[in-house]
Image (cartoon, rainbow, N blue to C red; front, top):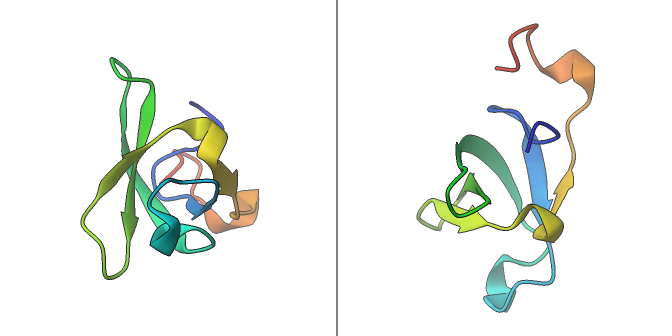
Length: 68
């Protein structure tokens, strides 16, 4: 899940909750046990999303050296 570091901007896609598809959120953590990325999307509660349903929208310049 390292391709989605904490603080990265991600876009959700191909979700059953179609209202969130195409929305940008911020990675706030990881759930290694469930293999999910915790994402905060505005107007929604934090969601645990499969990495396959995320596109990393951040550039390395947007993140600090420690990934935050």
